[in-house]
Length: 101
Image (tube, rainbow, N blue to C red; front, side):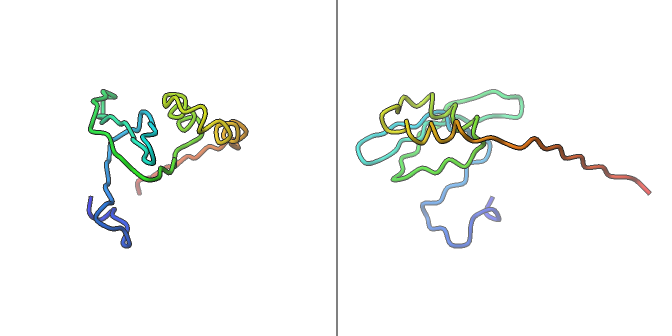
């Protein structure tokens, strides 16, 4: 996975393919991200939590809302959650076809 490592990241960068964040927990000034490994069959196995100073949710709104709901952080995340609920997606369809010949 070294090829996926951003060029300007430091030794704290960690790439975790096939890992899903399941909850965010506030612990003092830090965030604890609970996660599980997901295999190709959909089985989930808990993995060690990650501690961080900040967390960036870069997932579609439904997944972000599910993560926030599982995190029991209503007092911290009420306003951001309200903003996420207002996001609407434009329907889209992509078809990719490869033809022999």
